[in-house]
Amino acid sequence: MTQKKNFERLIRTHLLPLFPRARLTEIAPIKANKKAAFIRKKADLAIRLQQNSDSTYAFEVSRSQPFKSIEKQTMETFVEVMERVLPHIEEDFGESLLKTQMDVVVAKTVANSAGRSDDWKLLSRVFATYQTWSQETYEGHRVASALGLSDAADDVTIGLPEYLELNMAKVVGDGYSSLCIINRSGNLHAHEYLASASENDDTFAPFAFIPLAKWSAGRRIGVALNRGGEILVFSGGELSFARRRGTWMPFCHKAAVSQLSIKNRFCAKVRKAAYITSLDISFARLGGGIGLVRKGEKIIGEKLPVQERDSLAGNQSKKVRSFNAILKGRKFQELGRPLRKEIGGVDGAIVLDHTGRILTAGAVLAVSISSDEGARRTAARTLGKFGVGIKISSDGKIEAYSGEPKADQEALFEVG
Image (cartoon, rainbow, N blue to C red; front, side, top):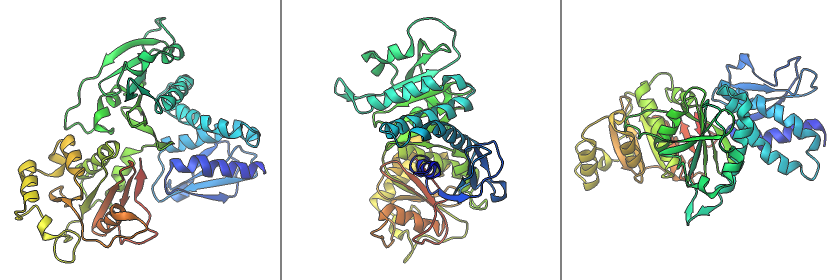
């Protein structure tokens, strides 16, 4: 197989899964030294991948959602790393080499973005260890752990590789309330307790991991293994990558919140609350749906998605009375994150108007379910007709739709 064909296969097999709904197209090469660069005439909706300025081939990765700088950096690092793999791809150890190289891509991207370019090897070691631990139990429980890379003083204690060989490393630093800190020399430095988050904290991270995300501000990097076997990476004060279902995925939170605006029809507070709640539901593995309804749209009534019996206004069913007693007339963005996550986990959808007023919660929508896509995606596409529909799968994937529902409809964004 030619190097061009192998390069294309590497992109399709190992890079595209990081960017759901992205497409790959062959394009003409240009004289350029950058391995990945925005194609400006396409408004950041496409990135050119090219091995070097002398390449006789190039490819374009495109999608309907604009790419962000960290995503471009991920692609550039991917091309850089894959250059070392290409000469060995058809040898017996080629595929096993590839699997470890995706850890390197993420480690280098995160380390560079945090101004810690020399620490990518430490990160790769943590990723490899956590992937092994994700398949194990300790004293009958799945392993949960957290480590943080910091600029702490160069005290000589025990190196990270030696520490990770100890069983105590599977217990000390639980990822939620505490972590073990690695200093700038790669040695175990300290243990730190992380203060609990306020229920109204709007940090871009799953609620349970907000303390670790906030710890990662500045030049720090936090890595956590949760009991679901997922690896979460925090940098810049937020969740930046996660390894879920065997695949690394980047998170561009502000871009997703922006996409929910659909031409400024929803205020920033409502969009951010909807997105963050989707993140919380996703990592709690609850599954759910959220709808944002444009101003002037009617969504409650006969032959409409929400039935009158599920409306929180004036209905007296037991479920509605219970929701009203809990919500106290507050708008969605005024509720604490734990409550938003919990009501989102109730079977059915939450539907909000453009101001964040909760029209219904736990509502099973009146929609025709397609056997090809399932109830949640059908409901999200239907809600999208009235504004935006968000689907959170029980496996953690988040998709948002807007516009008339159709079989080939592209998501506004897809993360997780």
